[in-house]
Length: 273
Ligand SMILES: [Zn+2]
Ligand SMILES: [Zn+2]
Image 1 (cartoon, protein in one colour):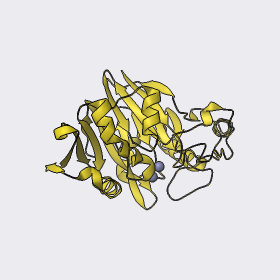
Image 2 (tube, rainbow, N blue to C red):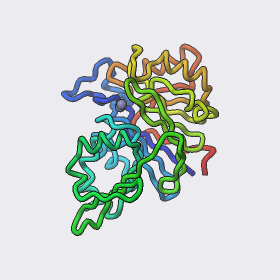
Image 3 (cartoon, rainbow, N blue to C red):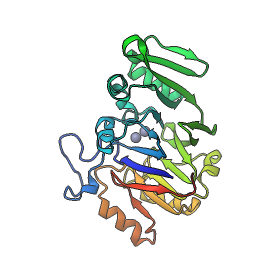
């Protein structure tokens, strides 16, 4: 059985944003408190974290999760800032090797943001290895991946696919009939086979207004009409998107199977082993 836990479904600056501003969100509804986008995939005794943003410390603490495998969708700050926590996390908590999967472009963003983490780096084929602790006994294995090349991470089968995200692309994730599409405005034709027969689709709905780089309610409806997923949970929502208002917006149009996600939401996947 595979379980998904939503650790965060907020936009780049979370809800409330720094300084405690809730925007148009009702602060009395706990479902409006959103950390940066991340989900935990748990399969038997194995786990996979998708994205490691600035709320990594709080998210893993609340979920009681000690992941040893991380998939990163792209190199924007809200998806990689938690990498700064890793040296101490490896040495004091995880106490074993960590595997991270990211594409070439994301890796170069990470090196630019955390150059000090790559001192003493070794390369093994497509994988970079960086050690921490006394005599480097705990290592990060950085695996370079590419869209449309399926792989297994911690025994969990993953198909990464490209998503258009403004001026750059991000990676979507397909695991069985589950799809994760944060930071996605639209999808190249090559990704369409990854978007058919979806059971649950976690999909970007950052703003009310249309934008170049993120989803919005009207764009979500277009994707839902095209790909016909059984259920959609919306993510990467900013402080102008109130949980109840967005829920009604879709229900009023006959799309009750499209609802906002909320931090802490858990569900089991069907169609995966
Ligand atoms: Zn983002
Ligand atoms: Zn992004």
